[in-house]
Image (cartoon, rainbow, N blue to C red; front, side, top):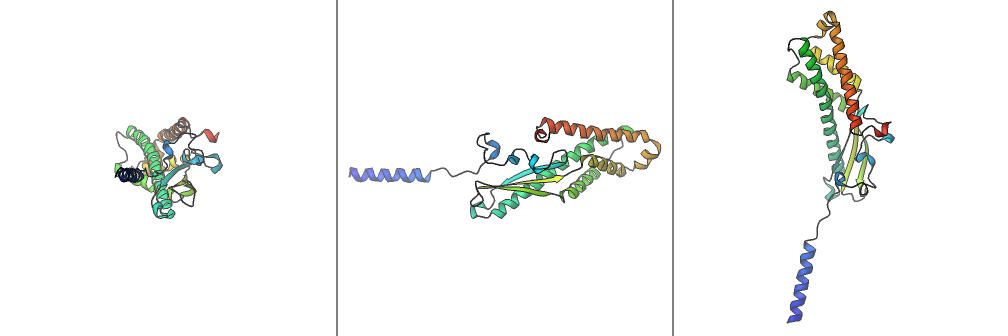
Length: 222
């Protein structure tokens, strides 16, 4: 009797321990130590790698990661989901860049025209149109499957959009002036005021450069 009871208890313990075994979790590279990141591509932590030929001075890059469909062996679903994340993140960065510039231009316009500026709806349309035209040139530069492409538990994708930020500053400024119907008056009567908008563009580019350097994104570009 004691012998059978012992076997029953042993069987029960093994069953419980097997059923409670922790499931394998997907890798979260954001929480990995430097040693643990060995084997992952460098663009997961800094998308602006010298070997890719793109600098944050001339592009906006982002990476995405997904596990969608991998339990069923569908790597295409995970890749597509990662690419969508990349597109959304780049669109958000473009929106922020344009929004920052718009705010500065509007401040100058208010000062020059007794509070007159570009309305929110026009600002949103200008911003969205700029995003749309730039996202057409989105390129997916790299795909990484961890731990291997045969049976991955996560798929990573890197994408970039090239942007001429100096030209962007002029383009957005001109669109805002046109939206406020101020272009002709400024050119014909107040040429000196146009210099103020050029100063805004230069300040935006200089401060953007300082921000990239403070974030360490220009280390590999020097």
